[in-house]
Image (cartoon, rainbow over all chains, first blue to last red):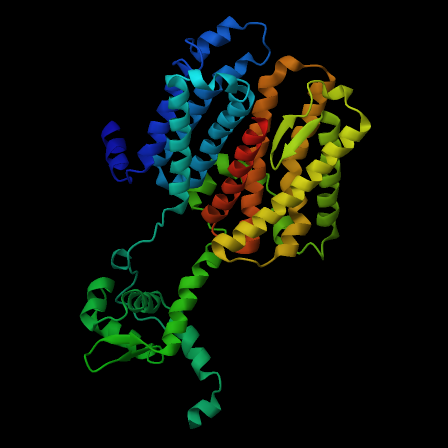
Length: 155
Length: 289
């Protein structure tokens, strides 16, 4: 089973791995410090009375959803539109997180740490993967087109 | 000459007859892409027998000619045929989604929530589409005002900390901003379709049914308003998740609408939707700063 999955993955263009790397980066950003020395999970537990605190989990949720979308495309290229819609949902969490959290923390922009960079790079990689996936011309070269009934003359 | 008089549509008939067979279309594409082709090249690429190729060359005699160097080239009509094949592939494939994509419960679910008939039909004949479209726009504007939300295409942001305390004038302005965004979104879609793919057909039709695209957003605004009135602030996570879900649904409706009415491949329509959506996100981010 695993061999067949790996062999399928090998047929994929390398750009599809961009999204996987992006997803991993976004997940990792959750466990790294952003504007202070605390990572997002720690901030969540440090703010039990904040009704918006759940937003701190958005990068993790987004990363997992996007990673799933990328992996789906890696093994099932025929489900391209599905994987893009899944990644859009994932990126949606990121956009909300940016608008809700980063905008309020912009005063601390000079103290940004590794987590923020991981998040931005991951977000960009996922977005690039979606655009590349959509613009990739999947034209079969003429010499690889399978001609059916090539011996049968139809008129 | 005599035979042409008997059959005035002789060239037209030959043109469509030439395009009616897969091998002949491929032969035209081979010459169109490479400039010329030899008989051996045809044989090698198509993997067809000598007799088959000779037969198709005979049918293509108005579209292909052979030079003294034995190579085949396109005639003027052949050039038109190649251009026709190359340009129309987008229109033919505009609504093509892979069968496996459709078979997946995920996309099938989304498609079942897509008002396909309303997007495909002519709104001027089906007045219901226009009525629904305008109703969505007006109701959306009312709920955006009541919820105190500032609209930016498909994104929303609280205008003030306590939206329930907003005065009527501010609510009216927020409703107006919603309608303005509705119109801006439509114009951006038209602009990008023209800029990226030179597609300007069915603009009025899209304008008339554009309200349908905002239907998911209207549902979100209603739910948001209910949560706001019930003072369920702790349900921020639900509110945000719903916004994401309805945004994606709206984006899908824009993409589908563009694809079926502008004859753009679904992937290309998605690019336009994404550029506008994330453009709006960047704009809102910069405004928030």
